[in-house]
Amino acid sequence: MGEEVKLFRSWSSPFALRIVWALEIKGIEYEAVFEDLSNKSPLLLQYNPVHKKVPILVHNGRPIAESFVILEYIDETWKQVPLLPEDPYERAMARFWAKFCDDKVLTSIWSAFIKQGKEQEEALVAAAENLKFLEKEMKGKKFFGGERIGYVDIVLGWLANLVSIFEEIVGLKIVDERKFPLLYSWMQDFAEAPIIRDNCPPRDKMIVKFKALLDAAIASSSSSSK
Amino acid sequence: MEKEDQINLHGMWGSTFTKRVELALKLKGIPYEYIEEDLSYKSQLVLKYNPVHKKLPILVHNGKPIIESLIILEYIDETWKNAPRFLPDDPYERAKIRFWLFEGVGRVVTTDGEAQEKATNDLFEKLKVLEEGMREFFPGGSPTPSINGENMGLLDILMCTLFGPYKIHEEVVGIKMIDPERNPLLSSWLMALTEQPVMKEIKPPHEKLLALVHFIRQNALQSSVP
Image (tube, rainbow over all chains, first blue to last red; front, side, top):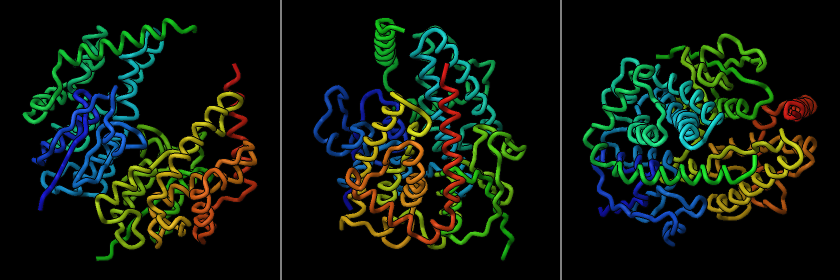
């Protein structure tokens, strides 16, 4: 049976990277289609007309968009190396933490990076509050998935490589090793896992990209009146 | 083999999120105990079961809490596998439904003036996209009471609990949110859903809900005055 799996991604999108990691962990053969998001291909627009974003997984010609939706689809279709736990309660917990990671952790850390002044201070406080919950969740576990990488680890994975980039650019500590020792060591373990290490965008390129994003944000906020 | 299952639902009578879970439990024929929680004074149980968000609804199954209404719905479907099923069996069909899970009404009820106008426009945009997207699920055009034609699933539950109180929204805000002219498909789908006997069972008393929504709106408007 010919399986055709294509992943529409950009070189830097952390959401697309989740799908790369999931496919690699499960040993699924796929073709990566790199998109220039400033010049989207007709195929991307055809496969994701609603959001026009990456990632998009196309399996035997059928497109799926939204990283959480794609991850569940992958787990249900290719049953080796399961990402989500089998028990319904554990699954509900994993889904909860994944949502928490995106809704709260990602948004607060992004704000801490991209905002200035008081807004940045507030974002840092919110980020620390949110990280505390994750730190607690990590007790007794190597990964959120237990002994091996699972769904929540993949969803939070951006923390392992992006946060140090943010910290370097802004000159602020966001995940303090002393305050969040478990989370900090998770970040090392995750980043060093072979599949993750071999599938991360180049750090120097990321620094350039995010510095440019920050410069643009600062420029637009200072040119607008308060 | 028959073990006594203890299912408790902590909720708020006027909340659409609580209604979703109530509906799901009733559709599956799952016996449960309902505990009304006062949002202004969070009980010890709420704080214990949902320390992260301190929000309702919370489903407690044999002492284990599950939170976030959509996550609860999937948990119910995965734990009680009897009909009706809330999601189809096929992974691609499931992905299609999951893609369309949305959070609806936003700030339309709690803002005024310009902010309300913007929120309303955002909602109408979302509804336009939803109207287009739902055509795929109702190929015949005129919808059956539910997407799979047999029983209410995830999207049906979401749709009728979010927009079921449309008469109240209209009275309080003076805006027709689901207009048969603007959204013919959504409108006829909603009408078909609200006619279902189980919907009439969970519907809160009109006057009581009207008073609550007025109250929420007044509170929100007053607190936004500098």
